[in-house]
Amino acid sequence: MTRYADFHRRSIEDRDGFWAEQAALIDWQVPFDQVCDYSNPPFARWFPGGRTNLCHNAVDRHLKDRAAQNALIFVSTETNQERVYSFAELHAEVQRMAASLQALGVKQGDRVLIYMPMIPEAAFAMLACTRIGAIHSVVFGGFASVSLASRIDDAEPTVIVSADAGSRGGKVVAYKPLLDEAISLAAHKPAKVLMVNRGLVPFTPVAGRDEDYAALREQHRHTEVPCTWVDSTHPSYTLYTSGTTGKPKGVQRDTGGYAVALAASMKHIFCGNAGETYFSTSDIGWVVGHSYIIYGPLIAGMATIMYEGLPIRPDAAIWWSLVEKYKVTVMFSAPTAVRVLKKQDPAALKKHDLSSLRALFLAGEPLDEPTAKWIAEALGKPIIDNYWQTETGWPILTICNGVEQAPSKFGSPGKAVYGYNVQLLDESTGEALTEPNQKGVVAIEGPLPPGCMQTVWRDDERFVKTYWSSVPGKMVYSTFDWGIKDEDGYFFILGRTDDVINVAGHRLGTREIEESISSHPAVAEVAVVGVADTLKGQVAVAFAVLKDPSLAATEADAKALEASVMKVVDEQLGAVARPARVRFVSVLPKTRSGKLLRRAIQAVCEGRDPGDLTTMEDPAALQQVKDLVGG
Ligand code: ATP
Ligand code: MG
Image 1: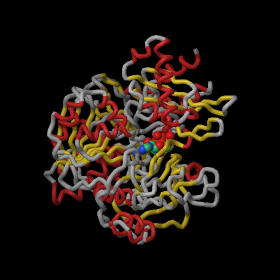
Image 2: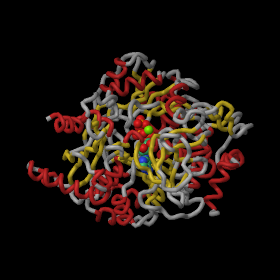
Image 3: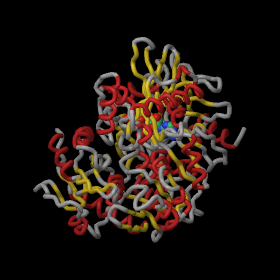
Image 4: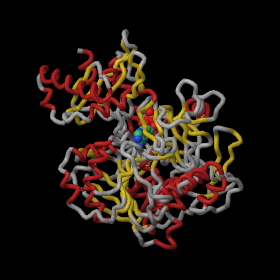
């Protein structure tokens, strides 16, 4: 048995012994009296009896050894600002923010909604909340009023922390009008709004409600706010899923289990060491931002880069210039961002000294082989795919190089991560598949390991119904993704269970068809959906973005290109997988986090209401689909 196989087996068979050891990676004020209480499945309580604090573990704990070392590195290519906070400075700023929140009436257990751009005050606000036991709920900055209003009503915050504006690609996005509109739409009204004024857009504060952060900060410049020790199971935050498949779910996370899970992942998965620099290109509005911009790196005593801006502005070398300047050792991004870089000059990746960088981690959507190969070659560094969900808070599948070096396989995020008893379930019987190379639903046998969601915020019933009801009589968590495991234990994610289509009795994963179409030299990106068909049950329809749009300028060109794309699918997958139509669009409908909104495309193709679109990036993209299928 390999070292990793043994490590994983122990995490399942001697669950409590394994996690008790990992728990030593963080500080506890009061030790826990039990490792995992699973007496009421599927609700798992990790480290009950223990008392700890996330902010203490991320900030205060490091003052002894690294007070003067970099903690938070803020870089904005939108406002041309760059500011570095040491752990001591971060500690001071977090206390100023915590004192300000307390002055506005925030107490332990209260919710604080954070609607902010990627600026240091957003990080201070998150850490200030966990410092005083308040529950933060970060909502992606720039979300429309309706999306924000529904999250205000769900979280019922005492205070909202916001800013005058964000900026993207040089365009200023005023947040204040969106926030005011959202508060007027919401049934719940926050007592106070704490405004960080960046001076980007003038605004009129609402009298009696809006408070100026600069003034409060000054008032509390020297106020000391000690960490509030909370129960390990005390909720640290709520966060919404991306809304790719429907109405976003409010994920509730604990404190102790999360801190332990992140600390362990920094060691065994990311191999990040105290004193080094971590750079995650995500946004604090997403789970990657929570776990791997803010808490994970800081818990590990690393400096973390918070970057406001695009990957290609001022030029495609900007990220790599930061890697050089701050000697980044671990980097984390998403395939969607790599695809953006792929359209740029690859020389940009060679301009800077990347010798400090050990690996680039990618997550969020399937990493197709051409993209993986391109970035691996351009960087000359290991590319490590990792598969997880907002719900789990840290990777389910990846390569744990901190335990044992192992090769990656193209197209696979890797093996089951320690702590996760991952199974593939037969879709019709719910039985766990035992043979390699069989397709099934990716599932996790309960209890979920530390750090995963405790429940759906204020809705235990939805938690049980949504995630734990796919196999009657068995406590298994469904990821709603479809996968396959090879004889070496490497998983391959084939797409979402919703994205499986049934063409004349043949079950096809839309991802397989997409991968095939992507290999056509003219295609930059593609979405495939199943559309109801009276004859065949369902047919596949593809919407493709071309590298050069002029290739489909005339109807005849488009027809010829459509035929050549179909031919590629015929050759690679067989005629049964051939899409009924291949249509060309200039942009695909995506969520703000870059995920394809297949269900919206499918609904439009079938003439149905596309449902909850609150997380959609660009409504014009769906309009293009409408125009094509309607006309
Ligand atoms: P919602 O649950 O609201 O529909 P969502 O599932 O997109 O939205 P997230 O939690 O942000 O919300 O995304 C998790 C999903 O992203 C996974 O279930 C999977 O479908 C996909 N995913 C994440 N990482 C990978 C990866 N490395 N490879 C393939 N798919 C991935
Ligand atoms: Mg999901």
